[in-house]
Length: 423
Ligand code: UDX
Ligand code: UDX
Image 1 (cartoon, rainbow, N blue to C red):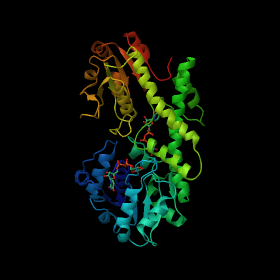
Image 2 (image 1 turned 180 degrees about the vertical axis):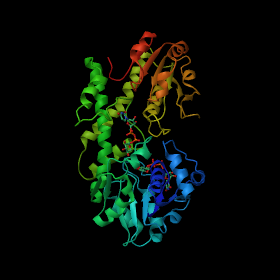
Image 3 (image 1 turned 120 degrees about the vertical axis):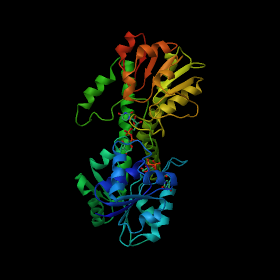
Image 4 (image 1 turned 135 degrees about the vertical axis):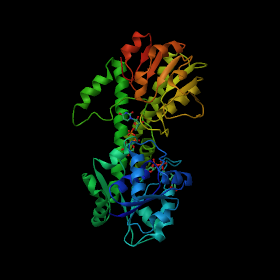
């Protein structure tokens, strides 16, 4: 059992804190938002993550997990300090390290000798040296331990990781960090910091590449009259390809892919390598948003100006409440830019959003709509009464940007239907 500090109680920091407490460690978690700290101290979890509220409440009850507003309170006396504060995309596309550097400068003087600072946030290659400088301590080690948590399954991914990556100059330090995760019995990749940091960016960039690739194949399928669902089935059966991350959609989004792909392009550029492949992946993703908008325009009769468009789903993917860099929101704003009035519904959104008329239920969003766009693959959309939907719309037309619905069933009800990559 170790004493661990977690700096930053967001999607990553809170999951890391609750799971490490669950694994038996004594965890102090700090955050800069006092109201977030207050809610968490009462067991109120401000994000949608399966299993997280239960782990937070277990941790509080056992006394192994506590929350505070002071980074120094969390870090002093800890053997391990995880940095989980944001590394947002800066104006140049490079990761903004200011939160990381500020936190490290703040806690540096208060750390125990021989304690270990762990970069959990996604940080550019070479960041362990940046943190070492900010800490100003020669008796404290800094390691890279990137996270591979998918939102919506973060607890599962933490407790059942495919691998644990630790980048350290000194292997004995890496082994100490690995000891924290011993009970997950996951494969361990111990390497140097630069390689560990590169593994994170390369993994996310590859996943984004895989999604962009299948979105391009979907466009090809439409052009040659193939069915992308069959193509993906045939591709994914090859164990070298795998079936995961081959679902066509409106493009990829979220708080990581857009930020991390752009950061990697800049990291490469700064190192003298032109990562043209990844630039192409990013460009194709922009095109994908536009393909969805063009489909909606076509099904609305050729113009969106003055038309009502229903938009089902606003989060960047289903089973999360996260709107950050959501493809659906991007599509919504492009529809509005073409003069459409966008009536939106999402099961996790119950407040106003700029440029959207957010409705309380999916049927209300369809009132008078010339076309319905499905932007997020919420399962509840599949079971709705589409006869009722058809009756509410100005014309029964749907752009199913997640290939979530049944084309034949909808066409039998008189809908014009367009999916992604479907004949
Ligand atoms: C963050 C980074 O954005 C991401 O790059 C990294 O991979 C993991 O950590 P996430 O947990 O999703 O991802 O961020 P977010 O949900 O925005 O949470 C960040 C938390 O840090 C917020 O609760 C914020 O209040 C807190 N914070 C921010 C601090 O405690 N101190 C700061 O200086 C800044
Ligand atoms: C991602 C990585 O999966 C995770 O390992 C990393 O730690 C953080 O970033 P996350 O951002 O939660 O996790 O979402 P993910 O499930 O990867 O989806 C990212 C985007 O790609 C979403 O917009 C999603 O809708 C889209 N996507 C994903 C597809 O369009 N098709 C797919 O087959 C998979």
